[in-house]
Length: 369
Length: 127
Image (cartoon, rainbow over all chains, first blue to last red; front, side, top):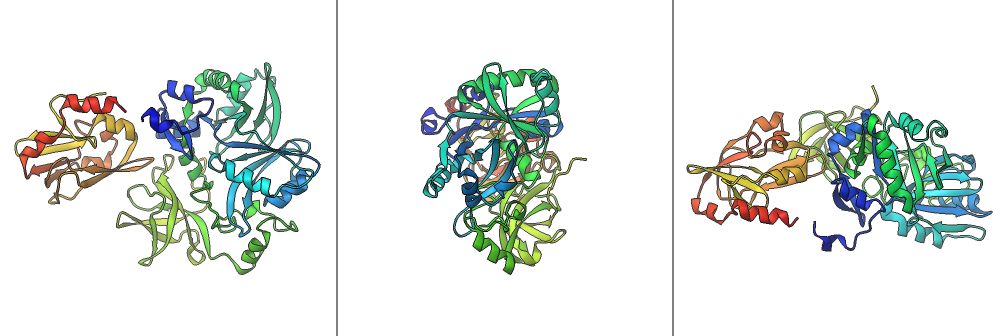
């Protein structure tokens, strides 16, 4: 890759570390990010069986505070912030007026009345513009994306690593909880969250401390088999869990109900942007639904935008697809007509003009044995 | 990166080994390293006629599907069926057991238009 091609891309504070580690770097939504270091398969298995560390500094961090922060967020997002106690976090959606997904995000209630929103890297500008446009009195909005770095430490050995790194002096927050901690003079936020289906935690820290903490964790994690992991394995890990990826499985044309994500939508709330569309859709029933599938025969790996065929007719198109490193078969997701959006329904995936049998499955595709 | 001196190279990262009036073709060590983790190889059918620089096979890694181009014109006379069971041979032995197909040559002089090992080394050193 020439330096010229890279010059317009944004770099995280860990760019130098990635180059040093021999990562393959790619353009990901305007960011120059590692897609892999030792290889997607190797990194994937490290996270499933031991430990991996991801640079997630490209993701956006927006802080919402002020006396009206809570009611304002409840109006802006689909999940119910009233149920979010200080120290807790939940997954939610920000919708347009048509009920389509602008972004999916995590909201952390990290101090009383102060909320950290972690949003997708490619959507930071759009999200912040949308929030500014709907801003109300009594709400303070701060885009801290450039000030924060983020690290995701994921895998069954993450608790052991945590205890070693903090010398047993700090307790790991519970699942979907967040708390501030100190490492020497560094203030950071630690959350028991992730995007891999494995136990683990995420750290949000000042950008200028990222290199130090990254290196220390890699060193401390060596005995647990830690590997630096790129976006390639992040994608295969999340797809095995059927976590949707915005821009692929989520779009402004699709609602969270169609995406099978009604658990994160509280229609009991009197109002939020997109609510009426979703309420009507719920009453009428959705016309199509996002479902995971796995290939039933040996085939090239399914990928996004392959036709989904039922009884000879193309009825949908895949939104994601890959070989599953854990299962050893092709897997993917697609919005299929509700009539066939059933577990054990057989479909075909058209791969370069050849059709291969696949079956709609239950979420998640991968389960720990 | 391994670039054997006795092979010819295409800009699109296929190697060609002349064997009489035939040529054995695979992808280079550089190409397999760039792709990494080859998980599927879509082989051409024996008997397929192909023009130089036309796509003829597909090599798929976890992340992407990449077309493989015929470096020269000819007819497919043999394909490496071992890759159906073990596509990772393309990674572990790109110039040996990871070969992909053999063409019978239409115009042997087309081989002269391909790059030498030195020229190919120069090409990949810039990336």
